[in-house]
Amino acid sequence: MEAGWGNGTELSVPAAPAVGAPATTNSPVCALASPEEVQQAFGAKAPPQILPYEANCRYTFGELGKPGPDSMIFSIEVLAGAASPLGGLGAHGEPVDGIGDSASFSMATEGAGPKSLRPAGDMPVTMMSISAVRGRNIGTFTAQVLISPSGPTAGQTKEQLITLVRGIEF
Image: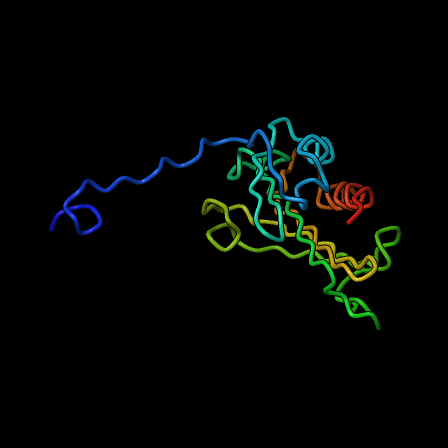
């Protein structure tokens, strides 16, 4: 069988984009928090790579298999007009004041691996999420982090996440 598109020509696939943060993005969700704000909020030393999608933006830090603030994936998802005019979100976690019209925080732990977009490992991944309603918009802010015994605790990381999200207008 010959390579190509059935006409005998050589198959040509464009090269993958370079690894690292893109120079620019026009994703409105990525504009809600700059890479520098995310980096500073969690005390990371490595700048994050930004992976924008249609309704969300994901910031990944470089050492996903090593515990600490540089082992983090932070994501923002905003669904414009998705909140019910009658009630917004149901309470699915601990209420958080000062974020949108209403917000809740939840935390869980799971093993590392493909489900968490991380390399497989022995360290559990701590998943922290804030779901918030502002007007008719729903915002979900999630941090996946490997908590380091010598770094910020889960409680400190929770406060860093809440502080960052309080400053985001969505």
